Amino acid sequence: MGGLGKTTLVRSIYRSQQLGSWKRAWATALRPFNPEVLLRDLALQLQDTIQEVPAGLTATRTQNKSISVMKLQDLKDELARVLKSKRCLVVLDDISSTSEWDLIKSCLDNAGRIIVTTRQKNVAKKCSREDKNMYFLEGLKDDDALDLFIKKVFKDNIDKHDLVPAMMEQARLILHKCDGLPLAISTIGGFLASKPKNAIEWKKMNDQIRTELEINPELRTIKTILMRSYDGLPYHLKSVFLYLSIFPEDHRIRWGRLVRRWIAEGYSRDMHGMNAVELCRRYFDDLLDRSMILPGE
Image (tube, rainbow, N blue to C red):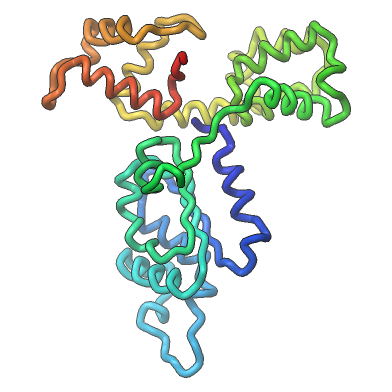
């Protein structure tokens, strides 16, 4: 899910001094996806290498061209050449489908390392080739979430054990709604850092958190990330996901009950060689893979 810290984690690797002389390029996949834009972005970051021509050799036709006017095939050829000549780390941030990966992977074969961030499990599987190359980033556990919250609110000037019971209770309730999401914890903690530090103020935030997300500019980042997770769903998954709003917050939804409801309401039917139950299972697994719903056990 958005806000877990995927990009932040990879950025720390990307900036690591241990990479030494490795050439590096970072490109974020924009929407709608355009492979030419992404590859041109990579080429521009590697242009120092691209423009190097060994003594006694003549620059090729593509090297003489400006990267900004290269067509897609020229960009692919030039990237393949430069990635072969230097050790390069290429980061592709927020790839959202296997088709996007298929459009660009062929010209990156010579890269020393490629790191892809994605919200989709099927994309991670395809890019990784082997499961051991795939890292699933989870939300923070309760103690780590509380440590981050306290650090943001008190700027490291207090230990969590110094909180009075009433403040600890409100902190736990706020963190329960953040569900281990570092972005949400950091943003709300930073917001509360400028408020009176007492249980009454924290209870006010806890009671009005939905309203605050709507009206407070300091918290708008969280709403934007959550909306991107929803907006990224295909149309058929948006409708079945919105249907889940009939269940109360934190309600444990039984699989059999949900299937019967989806079928009865017309969200799933026999089609494309699959019966309605099999189609429901695909919808359910897709929502799980995108972290829009969580397994109960």
